[in-house]
Length: 331
Image (cartoon, rainbow, N blue to C red; front, side):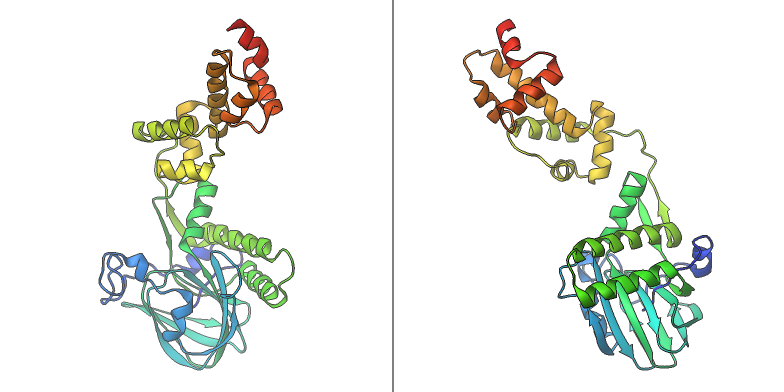
């Protein structure tokens, strides 16, 4: 139930690494808690953790409009808690007096002292048992796996094959302690700009975990482009909707990749960024319409997705070197 970060960065993984213990015999990660083939669906979310770790709740950000990150606080009596496979990564910060923390996962056992200034890290989708000898005060940060994946895509400009973060019983990590304090202050005060502050902390934590606590396997695909099927889908979509604003996220969904990965692969195939391709496709359609001679420029601007006739004329001249009227007179 704890989560553990380190202070100095280098050496934190070594300090916390105890090896990835296999899930308990009652849990198959491919089948979930109920034995079905949809394990992610049945991983335990933060709001259900008290069913396994009873205590008095002191903090709860669930009612806030926070995305991808949750802050909770609890007062616990001494106990031994069997932690279920969780949906999110759990980071634990400690208050009160120092005490001893024990972790058991399969045959692996680990012990460390926890207290103010120290944190623990609990990975997702694995069973383990945590036990402590004295009452403790804790704060939990729950961070979704999607946030870790998104951060990895931004850092490495491609989708990782795998991200592995192991449990850590106890370590010092001032950055994570500061994140607890920032989130606690935002939860308490709720001043303007709260969402931006929380989003910034979420991104900071995701990159921090990747830097100091994760093992990452990346595909060897630096020069890979889109497949023929992906290219055809994207080109057909763009050409059929030149009069609309098409987002990068939508194009990436059509291709079945992340926005980061899509942008890179698109440029490998087409030599330009997606938004530049869309602009050139709009100009090409405008050229075709201008050759018909009778179509008003205002109509062309609208049907080709330009904001107005002035925007159409400026963009057309920048791409072709002549104005729409000059092009039309020579066509």
